Image 1 (cartoon, rainbow, N blue to C red):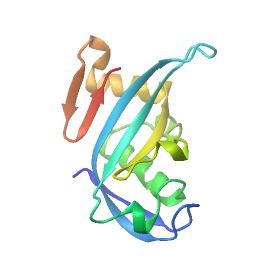
Image 2: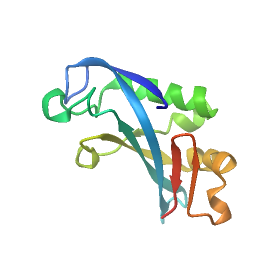
Image 3: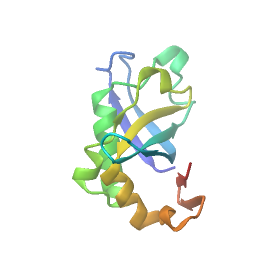
Image 4: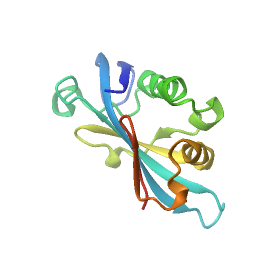
Length: 136
């Protein structure tokens, strides 16, 4: 387990307040935006389904406290800068899963991943604790 992120029940899809265990984080590389020239990707953040059931509790998606606590977790556990995690935000509603939260990430976050996980070295998959980088 990586840590906990608390919901405050102020999201559009759930009114539940709870501490939710973050079990694993995957970074999926999306590529390069043809217009801006910036790298983009997706974080898939897996949570404990026994603590949060989207069928009864709703989606964590749009809960402002969970998103803020997740950013803080990234800074505290993995030493990401505030500037990098400020660009981490919920993906669209249709991308949310039964056991995960889907988030968009931008270039600075991806560059900071590189110094920790070296995925630009051509390795397809690396793991540090529960943070997995998956190169597309």
